[in-house]
Length: 377
Image (cartoon, rainbow, N blue to C red; front, top):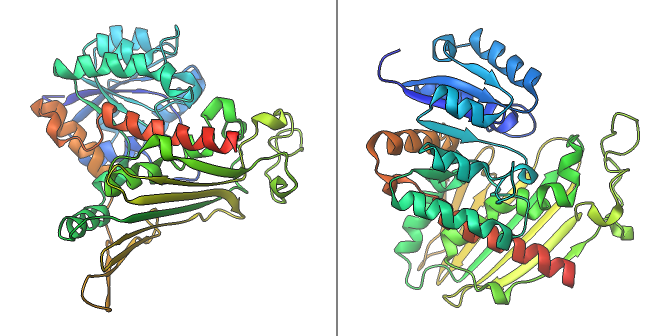
C-alpha cells in the first residue's frame, strides 16, 4: 500500500473502535486521516476483534484494513506484523506494571515500536507503575515516541485558555473542576470495581486532573485533601443502577469496600501558591454527563463549559466586566492528538507530543493522591 505507516491495535474495545458512552474511536480517526495501513488487532477476546475487523472492512475505508490480522497475543502480533506504532487501549488492571502479562508497554518499547497509550496509565498504585515510567523514559531518550491520550491538551478551547493565562500577570490563582457522570448506562462491571480500574477519579476524572495541571501548574501532592461518599454509606445508595445479566444491580456481587465512591471532593495547593479543587461524582441519570472547569486569575475568570459536547469558553478579562463567549464547532481533539502522534512517528520529533508518559505520570500521581486522601479521611 505504499509508504503508509504500519499501525496495530492492542485492545479491541470502545476506546480504539468506538461505542459506549464516549466520543473516542481511534480507528475512525485513522480512517479519516489516512496514510496508514492497519496490520493487526490484538485482544484476548478474539471474536470481538474479528467482529471489529469485519465491520471496518465493510466500512468507509476498507483499504487500510486489507492487511490486518487478528491475534489473541499481542506479542505474536508484534513479531508477526512488525508495526511502526501501536494504539494501546485496555482496562487499567491489564497493563502498566512489571508483572508478567501486564508489562505490555515495556514489551512494545523493547520491540522499538512507537506507542499511543490511552489513559489511565494503569489501575495499580504509582509506586508499582514507576518502573514502567523509568523504562519508557529511557526508550524515549533513545528516540521512541510515546503519547498518552489526554486529548484536551489538543483542544482549541484549552489552547485559548493557556494563551489568556500567559497574558495574565500571575497566571492561574484558582482552578475549580467539576465532573458529574451519568451512571445509568454504565453497564460494565469493571467500571464499578475500584480494584480493576483504580476508581472513578483515577479512571475518569483523570482528564480534569490533567487539565488542572496543564492550566494551573504542578501540584504539591502533600497538600491534597479529600472526602468522599463511599458506596457503603447511606448517601451512597443509587436509585438507577444498571442491571447486570442476572437482573441485580451491576455492582451487587462486588464487595462493598471495592465499589467506586459515589462522589469525591478534593482540594490542593499548587507549587505556585495557587489553589485547586475537583468535585467528581457518579450521580446523574440517563446518558448525558455534565462537566465544567473554571480558572480564576487576577481580574480573570474563565469557564470551560461542556468540553465533551457543545464546547464553549466564557472569559471575563482583567480590567473589565464584559463576558466574551467562544465556540469551537468542528474541533476534534481526538483526531488532533492522533494526527500529532502520527506526525511525530514520521518525523521522529517528540516535541509535538503534548502528553508524554513522564508528564502523564504526574497526573496519575495526582489522581492517586486524591483517591488515597479520600480513603483516609
